[in-house]
Image (spheres, rainbow, N blue to C red):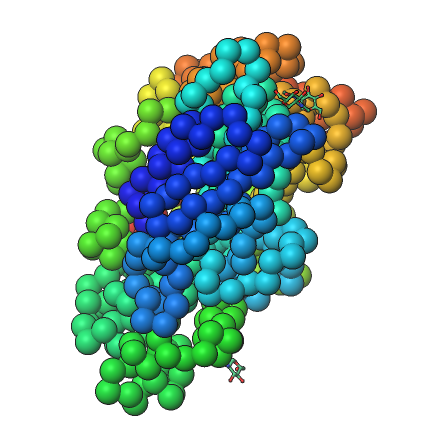
Length: 463
Ligand SMILES: *[C@@H]1O[C@H](CO)[C@@H](O)[C@H](O)[C@H]1NC(C)=O
Ligand SMILES: *[C@@H]1O[C@H](CO)[C@@H](O)[C@H](O)[C@H]1NC(C)=O
Ligand SMILES: *[C@@H]1O[C@H](CO)[C@@H](O)[C@H](O)[C@H]1NC(C)=O
Ligand SMILES: *[C@@H]1O[C@H](CO)[C@@H](O)[C@H](O)[C@H]1NC(C)=O
């Protein structure tokens, strides 16, 4: 999908720049024309619900995205259906539940949205940096709706184009290659660690789906299954795994993903130019059942099916002095899955990576997002100086690949060292008296040591 999408985005932007300053500009994508809509309140142009690939229906189900067919001119004034949703484990709250949307989820969901400032301040600019926003949701849930891309344009001083994309989720997003039983291949047994575990789980669930198991061509049978039925299967498959885990995450399959990402990062195999990476203080908490007593060692055995007692003992020793049992388990989840991988990423961009910590209490996973999109529902810490500092570190990075080259020089963010300069991070927090705290801190040495241990166990975590 990546290349295809990039080409389409380039086409959209080219067409838009040629279209000039029309009030309702039209882009011609070759297979269709879309008519954009200008928001008169701020002169931001929207192209919403652009079909970037053929509807993945019928025979195109479980296949790679196909080129969209010809269709008539559309008004691109509203977002289109979100993809069919699954869930994470058996969590009592879904952290990725999207905010209110009029869009009913549907299998036909391969749409993107483009937003751009129609009259950039100062000299007209034909080319602006582009942010591609890829929604979260563990590959089983989420949608492009629910984020107000206008906020990013506003916080960039009208200096960026924003594209938000959708992608198929859950079983709908798994190509045929992941269903070896139906694909006539036993390749799944060659997969490593978690990969084989996950492929196996999916395989078993599909066997349980009896009406297609006995078919001569099971994939064709599955392509003909009513989407609502498949949706129920998807719900069962995504809800089945351990609490707070996501069964559809990408895995090393030896073909599309050939190497564990931590190895690629350690070898510096990255395409990017620079990195801004922000982690929240307590990333793990919402993915841990807070009502179940479990030791850090037991928890690590559940979280990582490739673990044995040797690895669990290492985890136990590493967190033994780190608060009570629940605090330890939350830390195991947050550090192994989110926080340590952030440092592995940073290390892959020496001199070009910047690290932030979002710590506004309670500092849980996803709580930072409201501060990138502050224009609608006000974020919990509704302090303009803080919001501008936080949001504009992001937009300044989009524009200049360096949060020190600010889109608005008046924000309260002080000089931000690259991460490998003394392991400096920028802390985004507030005092108990609700004063913003935006200041450099040093990464915790203890944390970096734990991350090195997690890295050394990567063969067992499949990271
Ligand atoms: C939008 O652009 C038009 C034409 O340049 C201008 O007259 C108008 O004041 C702008 N409106 C806003 C809200 O910026
Ligand atoms: C964002 O929009 C508000 C008005 O809606 C404006 O006061 C503010 O200056 C804008 N911020 C930026 C960075 O453009
Ligand atoms: C989903 O799981 C429930 C409970 O185990 C079962 O009754 C139902 O048949 C399953 N649905 C599908 C479509 O597999
Ligand atoms: C953030 O500030 C709160 C007080 O408002 C404090 O309890 C917490 O420890 C701070 N977090 C960090 C990472 O400094």
